[in-house]
Image (tube, rainbow over all chains, first blue to last red; front, side, top):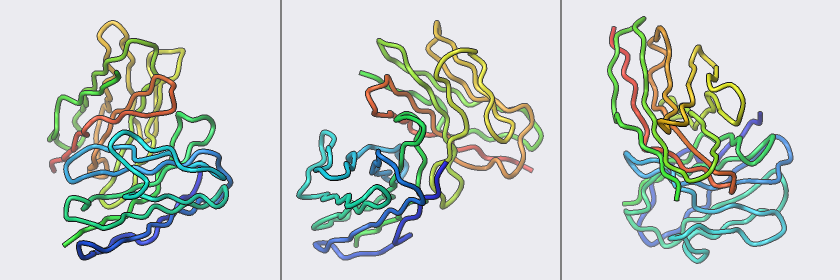
Length: 114
Length: 112
């Protein structure tokens, strides 16, 4: 398993601003993922964060809105840009250990946009 | 395309009673199946997984699940629940293309 931390744990932001969420893992991992969990909904994969190359985005998510960095094998950031109230969600990062199908999740960042 | 259906959004159950949380999936190919638990204000934790082999899978905290290919189900069970089991439970499936599809979750309420 892995110990995964996220910062901030929660934030309240004004519309039109941006927030960068950090994800730190206590060991080197190849695969890191970012998910969104909207209120009362399940998890939706935003993108796969690749070390040394651009992130791979899922349908409905674009780099201009959710830029991702992955400078090394233990760290990644997700930025939520030009926020609107519809961006209010929990954002979770996860890592795959022991194969791409076993994912371990961080505690999440609870974002409220007013 | 894959999909996961968790038929119950909420399940109330008395403490020390058994519980079953239902999960059905659709996929045209072989799948891997998972159950995750999310305690209040925490991230997701892997409860158990089915990759291959025995269809009865045992996980942490006394939970188990049974893979039923003919019924495309992967129901989660526990013979006796505790108040500490109060959480949201997510069923998930992947057909090995690196993407995991999650169900909408089932909130388990333990009644005293």
